[in-house]
Image (cartoon, rainbow, N blue to C red; front, side):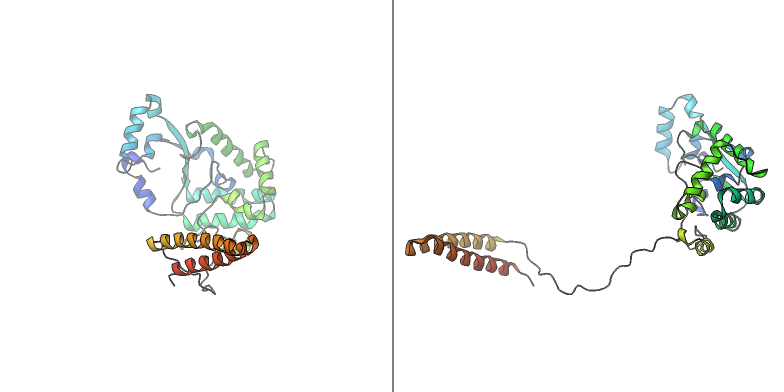
Length: 279
């Protein structure tokens, strides 16, 4: 496990190796690779890099109690060869309880671990809620997974998880069982191309194409109003009032005054808009 206090995190993450992610849980197929003996411990402060997180380290040390400064949390690490050995031993029973739908998913996942990962498989758990208290439930979950070493009679909690996976929609089956990866990565994408071919429901959604078609008509362009435009607006108001009063005075007819005013208003509005056109 890389330690931040030793400056190892930057090197670890800059290697840009393959990784899968899950939100606040450890997917079943991950746990199939491990056993309780693979639980190791890291100090919370080891997640800080001394170069990039100097301020955070200082704040952590100032605000934390002695117990918090020495707090540890569990994580998982094992050799790739041992992880693959466990997966092979448990494969048939896992597929038997989950159903044939998960056969290509499990096999593709194991192939991914075999081809994409180096000598070790590590599960970072520092992002889990209450991770410093996670040792108990993590141990229990890994002990339950060993059931697949011997058969398909599962503990209640694991049986419920299996039932949930069996009811999952095709579009959700892969990420719920294996976590999420980068499906468009140039190297080691997940879901892999082989899995997408065997299980098309996990194919990444196509990106929306940008249309290169030009609009059939150009919208008119207008410049920002200036002093002349303001003056013309006042002229229009005066013309509007003059026409209304003049027509009524000349004809003593209200409806003729309304008609004349409407015509003049339409003409003046068109002129004002046309003057502001910049195209």
